[in-house]
Amino acid sequence: MILGRPLNEDMQLRPIKYQWAYDLYNQAVANTWFPHEISLGEDLEDFKKMSEDERHAVSFLMSFFNPAELIVNRSLALGVYPYLKAPETHLYLAKQMWEEANHSMAFEYVLETFPLDREVIFKRHRETPSIKAKEDYITKFTQRMTENLDIETLEGKKDFVRNLIAYNIVMEGVWFYSGFMVALSFRQKQQLKNFASMIDWVVRDESLHLKFGINLILTILEENPDLSTPEFAAEIKNMVIEAVEMEVAYNNDMFPRGILGLNADYVNQYVRYIADRRLEELGFEPHYNDANPAQWMATETDTLQLVNFFETQNTNYEVNNRAHK
Ligand code: MN
Ligand code: FE
Image 1: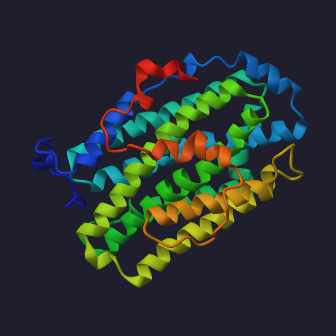
Image 2 (image 1 turned 60 degrees about the horizontal axis):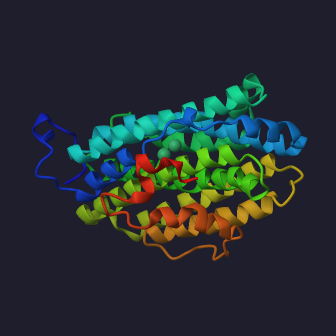
């Protein structure tokens, strides 16, 4: 059983029980990157020429993303790591936690480079209701993991899955992809190209985080058939639908007027499309049936990165091959 309080008896890597976790660890190590290897000089020039509304979108993204990376780490540290017995999952989670720290530092680097008001950006994530609502949604589920949770009980296992759905499927799998799409859309207009390369690296990491989370959920459901009830399935599906509604409110604040080629409706259609993909990955039918309005995202990031996941070496991810873009 993958779920349970890890004991010293469990701290022995071989024989490996969950090969997917071990393979993902090796892929994650091969995908190691460093923000300061990307020069943002040209992007600073682009930024200076951008409209007020375009700058608002970039700064609004920063307000959400910078704390969000650390919120994911808190969910992993308090809600995931303490309840998994297999050491190969601990290896992977240690690498993921470094990656989230690295993303946080990457966004710090952007904040240091662009003329953005750090005070405004940091305050905004608690003062803007649409961002605060997203953070509070995640925190609610992580909080339960720290309060007398017994992972041996059905309710404890349900809380584990709820937290996993919240930080992984919702935060990393839907909300982050919505933000990536906005960030990468500037490259479609020949702007912020190096910033986009940085986001490409973040997306590669996040697609592995997502693969780990989905494998973990499916393993838990397989090992605990008592979790598979119609009521619990409906609850999980509703968590994703509620998250889409929260993202719609957030995108309306990001684009009060819309900017060239990009507005809240366009981004929200992508959010519904990506939410359907996550539902399918969990074994549900799609809920929205929207087409992908940003086909370039599919070739650029979300589907491409999900190919060949179970090969330990994927040349796309190799550190030595980092000059690919
Ligand atoms: Mn991240
Ligand atoms: Fe992540």
